[in-house]
Length: 143
Image 1 (cartoon, rainbow, N blue to C red):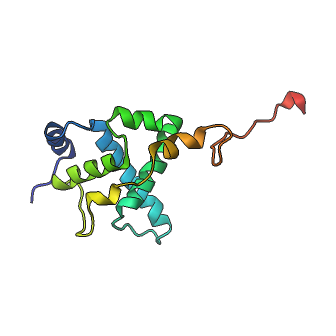
Image 2 (image 1 turned 90 degrees about the horizontal axis):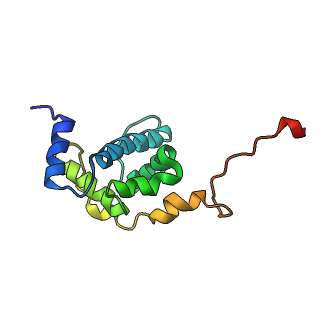
Image 3 (image 1 turned 135 degrees about the horizontal axis):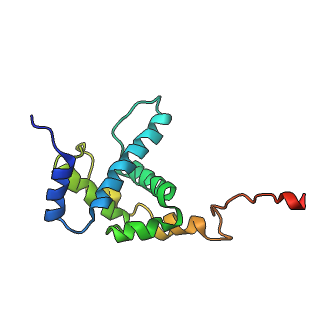
């Protein structure tokens, strides 16, 4: 069996389906690793197949960790505007042998995952519940 070269296969995918930029596929691959590691922490360090919903949660958290309030803008630049786009990327990779799936996995798993505005912008809005804020540093001059 011949080993697949990720970059060569990715180049074929991009020719066949130019909707998403190369970085979108790299992000998904890294986000999958991130999600698996997060799940393994609660699963006695066992790596297992993850569901579409688990992958979406991992991609959200990984994106916020990597790009903060710019996450939605970065994903949009790569052609990703909704959770269904992640599903399209996953199944492009499955169809070309870069990822595997079970008989229960489908594109439908990615429908209606979360709203990008809620997931990627709302945590950074001031005065919103769940807003991510930086702790105030005390000013030694005022002490």
